Image (cartoon, rainbow over the protein chains, first blue to last red):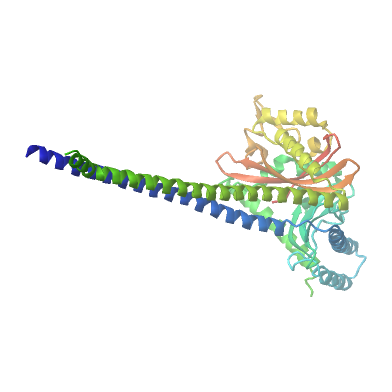
Length: 266
Length: 220
């Protein structure tokens, strides 16, 4: 009796153990397959993304045709030179006006024509006179920088404004689009030296040598002093009032000049 | 009797044998399926590698072809520009990182020693000029760096080079001339900070020597 029950326990025990073993094997196999499938899915997704990247690389990084580049660069150079010529004519008009060598009406009429010409190449905000230095104190000249870099359809460009001593007064960067034949992303910059000739009041700088002008306005301590650090700069009330007054005077002088040069009598 | 014993053994061993059979079948299935999965994985991984290589070679080929066109049309060697940019950045690191009188003086010395600049040249004569000092009646000396407010400078008198963007403006034989926008960070004593912008002009010759360095602060 006891022996027969023992046999029965052994039989069921063996069956249960084998069953558990089989189940464990099946579950581990399924989990293993799932992990492998996950790896395949991951690599498949990566391959799909790389396919797209490759296509994009082929399309966007197309090598420009030499002939097309030459045409685009020449086109940019011609347009850029027209713009610098117009800027130089603005400066010449400014100088003639300062000497009283041109009637105001004639000057405004010509400035209007120049602006109409400029808007063919520049957006409304950029199609203005770029440098407003006092012509009695500085002889400024714009030149279009030779282009050495480009993408398939665009040409980065630079215009530089020097005085007769090759001091940089201002420069303008932009991008020429060979399809629209216009400049965009136009960024205008004036140097501290160039800016010192704009809206000048007080002692004429023409009595100083170029080096003296530069030393007096261009040194790095002046540059550091002109930075807004976004914090209370601990000026006294009197200093703050004097600073504001000086800034207001400067702003008024600039506004008057700009109005004058933009043809305020339209 | 022996037949009965054998039958009893088979009866007892049947579940185990069944399990063994099932396991063998599973092992076979697993081996086959793992083989299939491994083949598929290897094939997809190989495709990923192939595409990665293709993208790299497409980019490199395009860059080489673009450089060739640029050099043919304009004479611009883009590798040379990248090298010159590295040299210029190294120079800016050497001469535009200062925080007190001692480091300012050592930057000026580096400008003279490493780049042949002189006190009466444009850079040291008009941009990074000799720092001023004030001596009071009791003989105490005040410098610009520790006492900027005494010199009318409200921001901090310090500079740390923050970056550059170069424009090639002339190529004359092996000499490349650049107009380069440079940003420097300055910190005010009370914790504020701002960016000083300047434009540098310089020429780099075929041996990597930088000359004719001029710098002009930009109006904010």
